[in-house]
Length: 101
Length: 533
Image 1 (cartoon, rainbow over the protein chains, first blue to last red):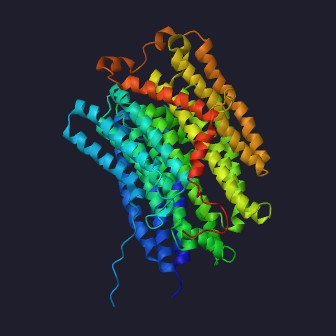
Image 2 (spheres, rainbow over the protein chains, first blue to last red):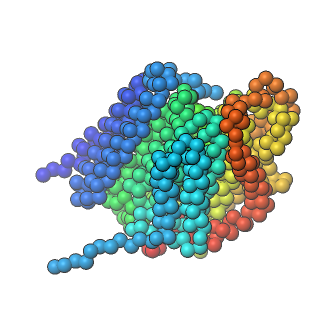
Image 3 (cartoon, chains in turn blue, brown):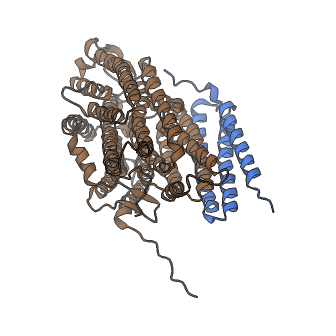
């Protein structure tokens, strides 16, 4: 059986890059957050494929922690978005520019 | 065949600070649920103060373990221990400003104090972490608490906007951190930094195909993630907005506690790679580049700021840039050793000296920040420069304190020597000693640029006439007066006086502090031969 490590890593890197581009270009807070989640899941994919290739369990277990933290992050993040929406009535990123020098 | 149940060795003293912080945070939550609004405003500062002070004392007690503990997940050496002490001091300062801040903006005190304590837990864990997963979880405990603390003032659009920016860029940085950890795991087969260090020491020369590249990617990604947290130059864009939008105690906390924690972990992380021969040259270069970028850009951008908190944000970008000089020297040490310039006994001494310099610098930066942000908080007005016009004529003590902070931060205060000057002096001295004169010169030149805006603030405070309309009755002060300050005002004054005294005492006798560092030696020497604990 050929190793799936290399294609998996390429996929993970691709997802991570898409996430970075999304954070840079997207203008909606929810879309930004989705891009960040995509990056975290790319990291998870890398971890699982390494753990599978090396036959070490800890890499797979680590993914569970990352997912838990991502869930907590989603909770806090959405709460922040709601607070921002209440204050400004929209969550379009490029229009939040009251803080500047 | 029967195997005995595996019982992990737990060093109780080692985890005592964690327990005290966790219990303190939980107690805050419970007490808030059980008492009314007024009651929790009174009792929660006490609980969080006691929890933070208990954690601080357990770090100061002589029996605190050195070396690895909790199954190698954490590593305490004199540097990370001093880092923890500094973190807890900044957390205590934040708590002491709490009562007034809560009244001023009518904040929910339950969340406010609980999150300060939990953030302190995350910071302490991060500063001691020696394993990628623990570091990530600690980083997130810290960051999530700080995002909410930034946006806790829900009626203020600025606060929500700052929190939003901090959250998006913080989560972005965390993703870099995790992705990098994945590659570190892939190349060294472990998430434990001590094992990674050994792996690089034994197999660094002939690593399997691909592993070498993965290790470089790993360092790069985790380093970028930490650069975001440290607000180093190309990755600092969140800092000014967050510093301005967050309430001032939280700004202080972000500027000191979270930076010290991330910095302490960066040192642990860089140490894992230090046994890898081909690693040092490129990484010394990259770290140097980041340091130069932060020092120059931070100091230049600070000049044009019209808000004190934004100015201090850019100044802290520059200050972190100075800290990176120490990282650069530490990373370069093994290659200097390999070149035969140093021998094994001096390298241990050298490492201790560098750690002393950087501990002193971190402590100095924190104490000065406590003074500067504390006075900004005391004055009120959310950092607008109007509040500082002619401050000397209205509040002479506050103006003098701010002037001391600015002199000290700029590194100009050498007569009498302040801790800001001494910290910079030792840092540059170490850089020159290891033939990195170039970066020391850039550091000194950028300090001169920095003097410009620090001094212009002093001019504003002392030589301009006060602005009658918006100077006297600033936002929040009225609410405080109506609600009755209680002891809050006196506590903040005592705190500021103590910080001022420490700036001079530690400036005159840095030995008091470095002696503390030397007593608890066993900093990890950055050598190729790792002593197994």
